[in-house]
Image (cartoon, rainbow, N blue to C red; front, side):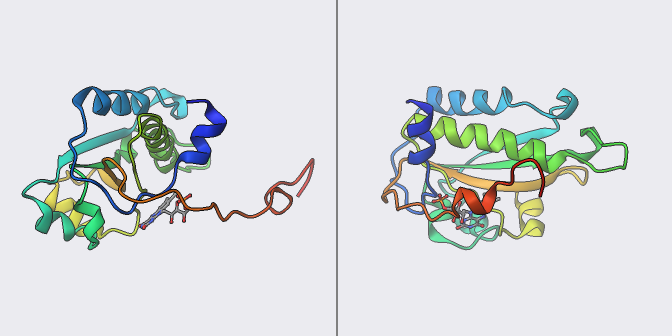
Length: 169
Ligand SMILES: Cc1cc2nc3c(=O)[nH]c(=O)nc-3n(C[C@H](O)[C@H](O)[C@H](O)COP(=O)(O)O)c2cc1C
């Protein structure tokens, strides 16, 4: 898909079909994340691939929406802050790196006809418990991965004039 079309077609999918995601498509989505740039190429992200079948109840402890467990797959993008690059003032870039990897996989999924929805409003303690995360791994975002059962909505966005400054603030 042409890039300008791809970024218009991506939307937050909040209803999924039960249809399986082909393994070669899952691998393409994961490969897109792998190729993402990261600060100093530290690659401090990890992705957990979760099959939802039979685990719906425990997964809904992480985020209590029916659509969260409706797709056959759920992905959790995690950060490993100790592995991430830090700026000279100490700022840790884990969240930025994880977000770029996540966006790569989200766009790759869209290109393959798959739906995703960023989820950050989850319960991190439940995520840690259900996914057996080690203490040094931070869950940053989830997305279901499956075929959409809803429709693209019109995008509501601020105008560029509000978002962009030229030369100075
Ligand atoms: C970092 C981030 C966190 C988000 N967390 C949630 C969430 O917890 N639950 C949810 O339903 N949508 C979540 N969203 C989706 C946004 O609400 C959505 O991207 C935004 O409203 C624009 O709509 P669109 O994605 O359909 O273009 C999140 C999006 C981002 C980028």
